[in-house]
Image (tube, rainbow over all chains, first blue to last red; front, top):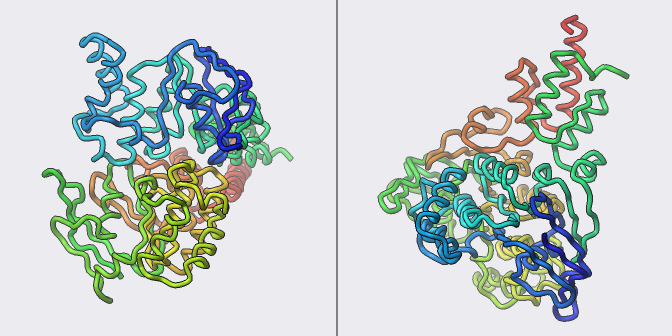
Length: 253
Length: 270
């Protein structure tokens, strides 16, 4: 479990974080939303133990891994394979275990084709999936994705979403793409260094607090009598097709 | 018009770009899309002149291609790679000073107000900004020297929804005056703006055309996520529900679905 009690960070008289109280339980999937510059990355860095708060208390039980939004800031070697094994060797794992974990993550994320390349010659998307791999391979108890899908194409996004669904540890999704919150059970919203809202994802979607294209579409469909209780495209599609073939909804006035 | 004829780029004996034949007309808005690693950024770099083609040529019938390339604005995918000044102000002023353009202060005020960059950021070192703020400052530094051609590499990633909206509004204004080549893996924010779409995969251009005529099936199969309306037009059609291609907005999509449902019921099929 990770607990933040009254955590503040003050720089030059300005609060970057202000009285943040926050509990993250093991295995809990959460989303952290907020505008650019509101303090999300700073909060993630405090949770990961990378920044000490000016005031307040941080209790960390378990290891935290963080995939940064600027993937290249994370790389220190000139070869992807070394990059991935770097963290594992630092953890003192045996050679066999290092290799086993690397094989697993290669397969899961489909990064084999550029595994022997220099990270600095990769495209934006390749670099980002590599950054995900290098943290995922360490199997931390809590895994933070700080806008870590922003350069990924559809296929790689699906692979990362699968990780979010299946990972046994805690997952924190920091994102500007509200359609990604469906992978979290709970949503936190930040504004100017403070957590201003927390609630269940389902509730926020139902109340229309998160305006994704999908939410808008579902609300329009509802207005015309087609009730679809889903927020993902494939599920919405199923609902529309059902309404069409079974003639349910759509016509009640 | 700028013409790319048989352009190929090799890196370590690997062909990064394969036989690219494209022409870019002045005043149009081009969107280059494709999955990760398709060669989009490399193509942008070739157009700008950062990378010279291994074979093929770039032709600018109206004048010297080098002069044109020099005056193109290029927003890189990772803006932090562009910063080297001590303050945001100097960063934005750099292009103006480099091209010895007059009215530095006025130009900076104009561009920062266009992008709503708050004045309190101007004295900060650019690397201290948040990811989204960096992106806006990088764009400001590109716009400040008023290039006629703009190449924007993934300008929307890392921006929050308000900044995305703001940038879209700015692009609508720029579209009126400039030639824009926008590189993105996410078509949603740019579909309305695009005159011509260029789809790349594995170093080749596999499709070009206006968004109204583009076969969405091929775009989706290439690994690019479709915006919501084309997604539903394509997938509903697979289930026998035909939505006209002219449908662009979510509200129109819902209307069209309603109309299809009513027609089906009137035909007595349900």
